[in-house]
Length: 322
Ligand SMILES: O=C(O)CCC(=O)C(=O)O
Ligand SMILES: [Fe+2]
Image 1 (cartoon, rainbow, N blue to C red):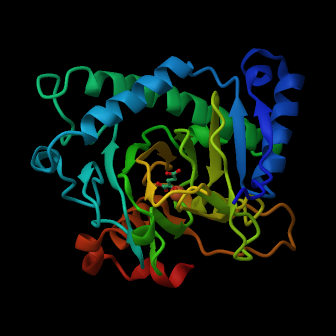
Image 2 (tube, helix red, strand yellow):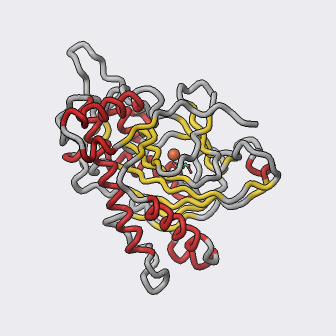
Image 3 (cartoon, protein in one colour):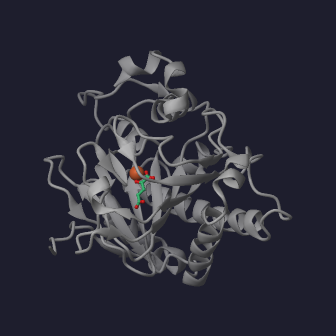
């Protein structure tokens, strides 16, 4: 059942972190090449120690192993805040996902287990969050360099941004349940912010459809790397130059009637809520492919759309702006 893996480039970030301006520009162009084709890149030598990443997976295991009742005491209540625990079945836009999540934020973080409830959880996640934010902003700086937007373009639109660090658990489950029509571990979707950092364990099952032809290919786990993918707002902002591509999590392409549990850790970067995402054009005759949208409204709209419980209250205004 081995399938050809998606053609996702590997870029070493060491030359960005320690190199001179010329070395940084080479890295920037490599990243841009990946983002403007498949929309995904593996970054290695990124500066976040593997031991830290491993410790976050351990925290996730501890958290999700708690009784459901306990996890529900931190249940996500408000799509506008989008922080806390989401149970299996509570989130999926147009299908059925078999997963549970915990969302961690830097400013709105009331539904986070306290040090007394889960020692080390908040502090370790806070530290990891800043490491992800630093790496993410550096990768965005690469994009700004490659696109000649001014090196600080993204820094300037993320000053008060409150990205979302997500711990994801796909429980062990019978293969035949996940493989029913309309079901998945996470159904095909694009992410809706600027870009996403994604750490995954060794189980597999993440697949990307790079050219939207319905041909999903595995995006294999590679230790020591982080996957980064472009999301919808970046596609809009770059007038389609960077591609937000469809992905899903399904059964890993291995034998067995029971799928083992899988854990992953995405970090979704969104701009400041008051920023207008208006496509950037490079010449006078380039036509804008997308309407301008307000980043804060976009985030709330898309979050509400995904949560079964909040769906009815999703504002209609943005639907017309696609
Ligand atoms: O679990 C994964 O590997 C992917 C998760 C994902 O695509 C998402 O949460 O948006
Ligand atoms: Fe995703």
